[in-house]
Image (cartoon, rainbow, N blue to C red):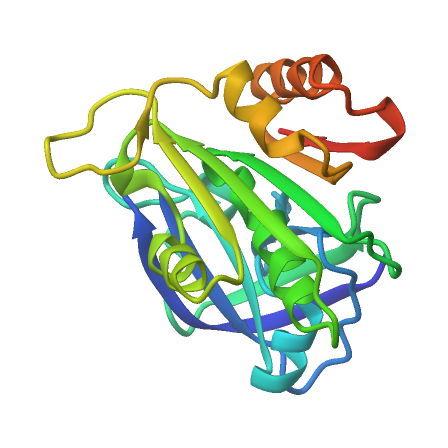
Length: 233
């Protein structure tokens, strides 16, 4: 496994529980496939933790930036492997790793289901799919505890308005009267409606119980196991 060292260009809070790290990879050859992850930690420290790459390969080539969505605590600090990370920090990246990837040949319909920060690899996949000359029809179902914890929310709404992504968001806990999305956990009826007569290739990412439950729901909706790809953390 190859180790790279990158300078943090930006470290900004994306949601109350996650920060978006953008690393300057313009001088390196870091090749990856949308959906893959890497082991990340501050340079000079032994601690590494796997994070999915949130940028697509095309975006990273054009911008020279490699993006990761990392969990943070209430004080904004990341876990020990990235504790104190900020713009200008030197970060070690081992990888890429993982087989949860967007295939080269895509079917006409893709369904992505994310829980919390599980949106990161799906964002890379969606961006990559939309770069194709004939992009597939894309549906994104995204579940988070609160509306504020929906990462990349403005991007999803913009793509939805343009008709490029069908976007369904739900808040499982607190949501005030201004919230116009759905409420509660993802329901079987929703999955049935998104799957019916479409035969999508499905990608699910999130906490292990979430992924297990959604895989069951997809099978109940008639999706064969071979068309369900999953990533847990």
